[in-house]
Image (cartoon, rainbow, N blue to C red):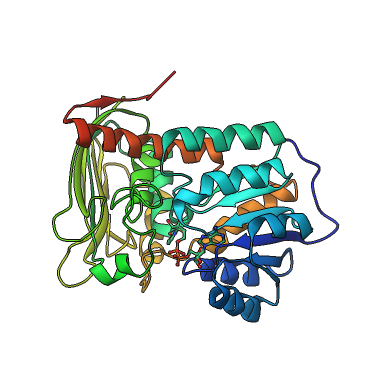
Length: 352
Ligand SMILES: NC(=O)C1=CN([C@@H]2O[C@H](COP(=O)(O)OP(=O)(O)OC[C@H]3O[C@@H](n4cnc5c(N)ncnc54)[C@H](O)[C@@H]3O)[C@@H](O)[C@H]2O)C=CC1
């Protein structure tokens, strides 16, 4: 556990590298927390992206991460760059004495994720991994039902991610659809759903996966399916495709237990569609309010995620998802890819 002197006499200072699509959610989250946080520096190698970010945020702009680290007074560096760059950038930031908040996935390779955690530990700095979907009201309610053991024994779990990503999406940036910098439908688009397998249901014993590149011109998979056995004995599966015609159709989880059945669906786990338990509970009153309409599959969790990071920096909380928590879903993802590649069942943990 990292113990750092709390910062309570001033705002927490952030710097961000990678001013692309998701960076806007970070800018929005920081604007919402302007009473306790400020963005003071931004960096991008693309001058147009950097200019737009400087204009939106008023932060100082830099063309290279190394230059930004040499000049900034930030406490935390946010990584919103292509996924395969997170390891080297995270380690550079840790070694330069900064806390790090990295977008998901933390890395595209298992060893890289381990090195990131080691570097942050060595520097005695936090490594936060963004998992904002955990903060969806629907999933928070489901998590509470799990914690209260309302399902009894869990028998079966099914997760579906039926979304659409046209070829133009992959062609829009060179890193998309590559093994080194992105990963496929499991690792990029469905990574928050892979996270649910461990965070909601518990430790996984083994996986058996198939992946395919059926329609897009990319290195990685656009479609995949995996059978999962949990250590508790529960069985389940996860089905993912980015080829749904003609638009995003479903992002769902169904849990069938001894004393309860729940389905959270909609386009991105935003609707509680079925909620039935043998015993009533006060939380049942909250079902209607927990569902929400959404236009973005990213959800609304970034500001809530930031709240925990800011509170942690102020000494008022502990990290919700740190590097070790990030490693759990990375380990599952790598197990799935090894299984699909070699046509075999892969057991966890990957190494001891
Ligand atoms: N939490 C979530 O739900 C989401 C997370 N993400 C994650 O965020 C990350 C970025 O994704 P997008 O914003 O969609 O990508 P993007 O391609 O729109 O933006 C990436 C930006 O990084 C910049 N960049 C590339 N190399 C750089 C370098 N060496 N130094 C500085 N800047 C550099 C690019 O010029 C670009 O502006 C990925 O890891 C992705 O998986 C993306 C979407 C949703």
